[in-house]
Length: 141
Image (cartoon, rainbow, N blue to C red; front, side):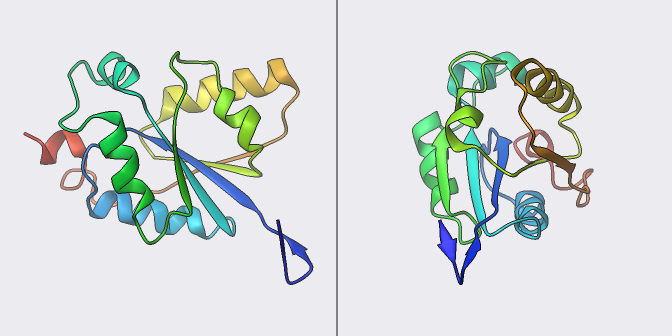
């Protein structure tokens, strides 16, 4: 993981990503400013249903594939099968986790997990981009 004699900084973001829109683009651009490599953890179908209360339009593999093809994303992986495990964080060992402005519960839970596991990860919350216009729940209605 070396680049010009400097270690790459790995940034991880979480999301369901049921259709990519300008809000996601803005989110990924902000996250890119915190590191050299962006890894997206795409929420599994069961987790998406649990969090959103409805089935995603695209299944987890389709969502992961679309996110992986995005020009700002270096890699996309499927998330854990159960909330709060954070096996992907253990495996990826990010320097920074960037969260969306609306991922408040996730932020609390990541801090809980870091404390329990002695993990030292910088957590940053990204600014919203026209949240009344570019939020998946609004776009999909």
